[in-house]
Image (tube, rainbow, N blue to C red; front, side):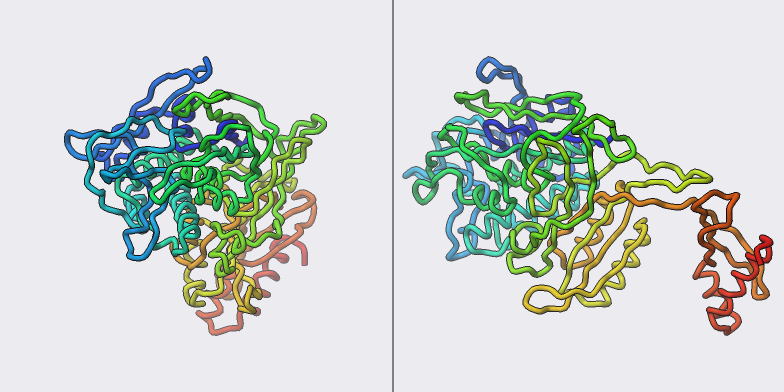
Length: 528
């Protein structure tokens, strides 16, 4: 069974609603406090939860209270998340829907995701954190590997959207320290919670656009706000109007959904285990609750023969290039761009496939053990990325590092990319539980901006290593059977490294050592 989650967002999504749903599902608040404390900014916030009712329905409300100094606590929406005035000539971002009054202190203008109260006195302008500072905080925190990779990806996606809105590179996006604190808690906390629950795959419903307008630093802005609209575009998210003219999807919520969700659309086939309810701040015409469904999805080898519920895992390509989406798949021009693999649920309510790569770590059941007489079907993960701007020596190095980290196989193919540039398609085959480790190496050691992934099935033959004696020394031989050990083997191959070592020692051609090992094995087994 694969553990899956479905974000059901009838009134939108925000980071605190995700956290409320995760707490409601049983993620301990103490665990989140402990893990977030590793960021080294615990003095900047206070976390607490409460049970609330939205349209008479119970839900969990997650609160992030920001500590401005030793004695002053305020709610997180008192400040914008992004500050583009940190560099001269850049416009101020209004993605968090905050306006300044004549005294210069901010008043919140969106109230979907957090509760707050106005401030009566001005606050000093908080210092800023660069995107690289946020990334360094996450890397230094030594979080669980999946939560770390997911968190880095969500923040980068958020910065890419903000940068696209204001015409600056993601690396130049600056965060208000207070706003960044809120975003750090919401994003990293959500990733920690999904990891704690052991979620292998995340789906999301279509998202409501909301409507109306919000006050911002330079006047009023339409809803969805520019950053949210850009994230919808980057993720090719199915959207609709539910008739509620409020801001329903925040930039943080949109970034979480578009980065981590594998597919958008209807609920996939699953065995439902539990539903967590995370509350928004205000009462709406619909219950302002995000519902996080947790269940089990069956993979090949565990399929029910129930009609209409056939799960098929494919490793194809969507044909939409990540560079065009502007998301994790590339920079909008195709450099380092990727294509997304397909993971299709064949059912009348199959979700819509999105064309940007996702960062869920795939953890299906352990592969079946090899039987003595029959081929075995195993589930493996395939990672692919296209690179056109990396020193070939670095590619050789990363192949070695990936194999040392446990990759089953790594290989490259020469390809032609946009603008007629020659490039390399780098493919990694690994166990599903090693996806996060291998992706981390790819992001660290290469210039790629995104990695597409897929689960595939492979059939493996029963095999074993045997040792034979040759005139040059012992050589290990890999022997595999397709029709049972009582039949002749399908494949007999001496180990390359053993033959190479003996060839160097005796200064003999490698092929002679290899031929001697084969002859010795067939003679030893009476198959001359």
